[in-house]
Length: 215
Ligand SMILES: N[C@@H](CCC(=O)N[C@@H](CS)C(=O)NCC(=O)O)C(=O)O
Image (tube, rainbow, N blue to C red; front, side, top):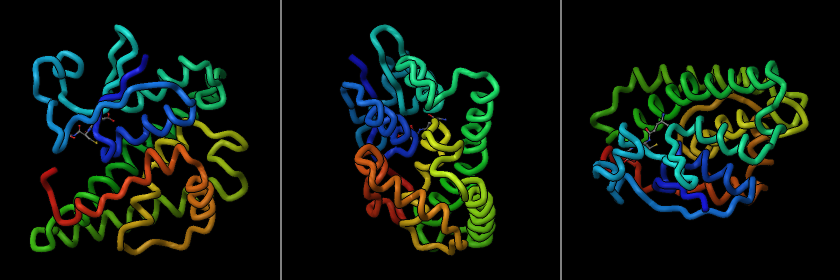
């Protein structure tokens, strides 16, 4: 039996919860971190020395880092559409996954979601937030051209890159910020919203986090 550890409100946990639901994999989900606590115990630090969620347990195998977990689950399910067997195709998916985590997630989740949404107004660094909002607009304009003529980033099938990037869309479209005109991204997001796995795992209301830096 697989066990996913991590609070459902966590962005990085949501990627894994979404994939588990897409693959229809039976699992237990234990809420941990944030207000649930539990990340500083010796038992948890043995599983993840960094004290972060998500963590996935599969029997004796214990994994941390959301993208490593996504790759493990796709391989475990022998799902070569999600993470291709062909090494060049796989490297292309990896490139967008890495970009998602090191660029888009930094500009959106850290720069906009934490910098604007979670930071109380009096403490916001407005100039820095504006720069992050502008960088996100550039990222989404570029993505809009990538996905212009196909349903998924790489064509007819969903890959892990759709999951890591698509997880941003709910919060990006829900919060009150300037957004560019990105009709293809909007269509992609509308299709994601039709998927029960996306609705359950990613469309988790977050209003109670507004102006609140602590969990
Ligand atoms: N790069 C890691 C980041 C993990 C991370 O920062 N997790 C956050 C939640 S999104 C966390 O554990 N925060 C502490 C907490 O929730 O108490 C990953 O992708 O798994």
